[in-house]
Length: 68
Length: 206
Image (cartoon, rainbow over all chains, first blue to last red; front, side, top):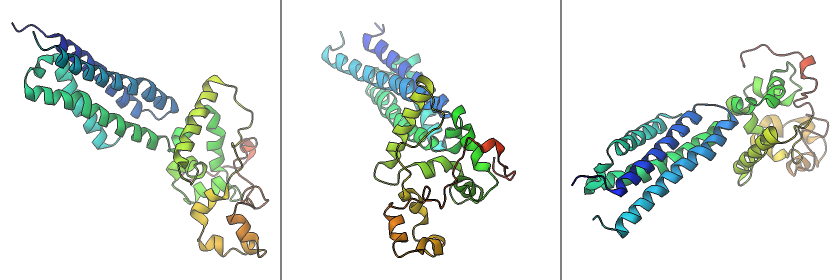
């Protein structure tokens, strides 16, 4: 009855991606080197964007297919 | 990293962690609103603020000098000779010393900072994937506009006899027809090839 719904798995994954992106952002902001900006722009931004897009897609899928 | 940004990242991280541990929070209306905040609003905000912080950080002198190829340019800021323009500017606090490279090498025109940053990305690509030139040259001749951004209107500039040598000297300088740096007046700049042979100022500047 209280089993996990598929949307919750997706939200968990999206949250994980965003958290990873934030960790990358926090670490790169503490390193004063041009490569830190590249890592932030390439990895951090990518992870956060992927996480938010994944979350929005999960929302869309949840509204398209109402809970069983 | 500013206190606000640390707080923003920390709050977002705690909320995200909560959704990783207990994704079931989203089952009620309040949880769904919180999820929107944690998974969309805060990360987007952290991204925008973080990007701005990275751009600000990239203006710092240590940032530019952290690349090996820039070391002699950093050293040239310590030359003990007031004829050397960058050294005398840094040693006499004529600019924000923490942003010394950026202050003189940005373009004081619309989108100048953006252009400088894109140029920086190009430098990085050359540094890691290209062939490093023996002498680093500017993409285009140094524009007097960058000097005049600070010096125009200053008594030391406007009232200098050499700058009023002829009726047209001042106008030519302001129109960038007579270069401050390459017309034989202020032509000692970084001189990186001879920097090791020059006397260094052992003052307070790092």
